[in-house]
Image (tube, rainbow, N blue to C red; front, side, top):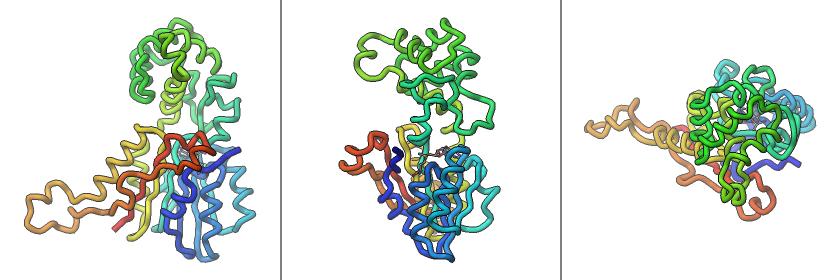
Length: 300
Ligand SMILES: C[S@@+](CC[C@H](N)C(=O)[O-])C[C@H]1O[C@@H](n2cnc3c(N)ncnc32)[C@H](O)[C@@H]1O
């Protein structure tokens, strides 16, 4: 079953006005979108994005049972500005993959279930996990595992991958990983988690588009509008934290000036100083929320 992460906190964070316009950048199975739509009157409107066709199809049916003042775009949220030409009152990003994507064995996201190496959120794109695993040169694999997976055994795993090509399925890859890490690591935690995360981030270019997508989203906000972002690992969170810091500070050059010109002034105020973590209750009910963090800013 899919449980939306930090649902109450993020919906409160959006500060929804019944006649406002909102964007859910990561529709998924419409947990958040459903709650937004319920809070909107007929003058309000919800736009939602997802690059996953299954999520779009499921959620358009689900949202119709709540209201009809919404529109869904089956595209990457990096294209948001091409689709939205109005200013909006709040935007939510709930990043990464959804639990239905992880649970659907065929998608190839899970190291517990055997499937062809895929991991594409958007099935229209060419790059998939098979290509990353079987075609990338050694050094590129090492970099990906090290940077996107923060995997200390990146070199030995990459070597193992090269020695065992072609690797066709998720469980074959899992076996290669297990055979190429120290025994202590094998026993401590699941040795596949970081490598699978790294390959998934590469396939979907998750970190490459994040900062520019958040900037585009921020541009679409009206004054007083809120941007809420839920992240699931430290790499994503660092990007959000740094951008929010930049947006909520005066330009560094302004320090030398007696009066700060408007264009150098902070563009936003931080609503969350440290980021909100899930409550103990949520943590006990939903394992996927383990490393989640919500950050919110408000446009000035
Ligand atoms: C964590 S889930 C969202 C769950 C949703 N908030 C809910 O409550 O059901 C993330 C969703 O965002 C989508 N997604 C991730 N990155 C995307 C991107 N760059 N563009 C469009 N959709 C994306 C995924 O396909 C997935 O369905």
